[in-house]
Length: 527
Image (tube, rainbow, N blue to C red; front, side, top):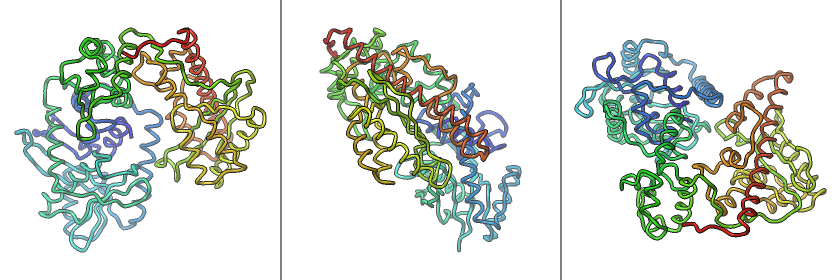
């Protein structure tokens, strides 16, 4: 879930009890959902500081809105299991806290959207901490606390914000009733009830103290940027242009947040300073944070410096001829799918293909039907379309971008099997253009996503709205209508977007080959 989604969902859940820094009540208020501002979509103290000052952020995208709606529906389905529950969601916060105390003392009914409140001293400041658990469930002695989440993997450091949110509920319960809750649980996206260790709430309080410090400090926190860290954040349009203007080392692709943070700690704030201070040998020896330990940059150093040069000089730098096998024609291959939290199973709803080159063909697409066997039908339609391409062209490369296509073919092979060995033949002919691009050229970009590289290649999309998240949102909209007249135009838009993805992949491949030809078969040094 993006930071925008998490924030929007938190505001919807906690209407009237939002965190405060300086507004009434006289003491600052922290709420158990505040962890999402710190950790979603990535850990960032600056985002906490900006939100405390009501700095404008991007509104939720259509995809984000879909996630919010799905999360509410997931929670409501679980609520239906407890027909005798009492709903406190519309009760004012002071009365809600009091009613929750009374109902827990009675130990009879499931409490939905109850409220817990306690006071604490953090960073020398008296604060009020509030939590609104989705469910308080009566047990033989005491109550269990449970939240519904779309996330499927929780615990072990994954989804840290959720773990801390539940731990805060546990601490609030213990402060209120003098003993810990019977259990802390998450009703996850797969419908499984997962237990969350309590641990006394110390980690949650320490993190709330950090959040409070971020809010109260007057100076904007220094926060390293990185594409993977920042691209999904609602403040991206504020922070990223500033990083570009100052030529931040955070613009480096493939460097990782650990190395970027280490460079900035050493006073190397810009790409130019990195190139002045380090060569491949010295950068390779640099220790950077890695999985809770440290690790040398090592073999990645030459490639990182090549990326720095490309950014500094604002031009692509050919490192070696791209390893694209010669063939008269190529199939551009792109899938559109739903992650498991958005459907009962991980699902590909569009298998898109088009032949380019000496013998081009029209756009071919296999779509999952909307009926009971729609997913299976989409897979076997794809195999039939692929078989027709092989019949016309023989073994032909299926060119795709990144590992998604290969992994989903494996998934569907296991789910439904192969027909006449067509899927195995597609796998044998897959050609992933992303690692080829990485090895052959350093680009003046911070991301090697197709959407970024296609602009360098000169490809211009015609559709005003597009993107993987947009496609998923539109497909979910199509599945929720029974009106074929409304569904067909939506599917036509999704097909048009996929067709543009295929054309963009071809444009990038041709551009790569053109770079190699322009270099005359030679490559520049990586350092």
